[in-house]
Image (cartoon, rainbow, N blue to C red):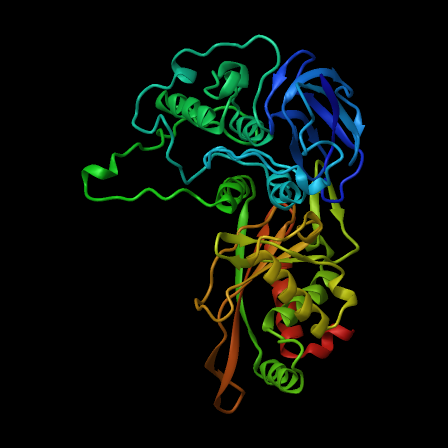
Length: 451
């Protein structure tokens, strides 16, 4: 019997991550890509899969241990020669397992970090958009009709566990339909659907019921006409529940205003005419203006932490980047220390990485404030959803020429619509209005950002 050690692969820069769950036992036969342990940091939760198949001889870690890249997790016995995908293989050899598209299970390496930043900092709440599940035909799911409390450890992915926690579902009451009784997201969804039929809806805040709400409608759309079922993208599966959670949990108020960017647009065109290495967009100016306002109103550059308000003395701004699979939010660090051209270059590079699906955990972490710019798409105003744990987000629509009174006559001016959504627990209406005015003044005369 050949023996090999299975180690922790590259975790995308994370170090000393605690082990929160052991998923295998000595003597157990496991397949390649079977989950070995669950790790959880302050940024992400992930499962580490086996890079080879065999029989577990020894588990080398326990719950509470901290591991990093290269830490030995288990010793494996194999019949014959060890697989080429052993612990000696480079980190890239540990690839995520092939999984059903409806079960958003954690994977390894940078793939984990890139997708789990949004999921870890904004855990899923009750989805407002549903996917096709085995129980969608209205039949009772065994998890709901005959819950069985499994003996021993529960087998469920980190994403499924978070999903269940936020819905107030006790996993020991859910019967798993996956291999070896593994509980999937579909099992939890089916369990919740059965609960909704009884008139109770779980709340992400307490896990208790919100009484008085009708159950989620179950409609056979096909009886009305032809339909097509399209799976949600991975980004939609992650961000959708997080957005629903933020909308439910944060008391949103949106302050709408508009800024005169006539001179600023002329300056932007001048810069672009003089340079060929980078294209400066209005987003770079919005970031500089936002930082100027955040410095004047530090409660907007903050986060709630229990009974305290954490005021951040750094300015890392996230921006919504459009990709074929949905919106993601890369982060520009230390915007206050960078010029407009440098910001424009970084936003362009990060947007390209987002479109290619190559963002790293560091690219999407640490934001203190977010800007969602619709650029030239159009629109007048909208209500951007606050990206928890931040307390504010600035939205910008398409700038348009409009007549403005200059005291003696109406003159054409380029007006930039602004929509500032904020957490009313932290920012009151007067402060929000003043914040918007500060952004307006900075956009009208960028020299104010030097003050």
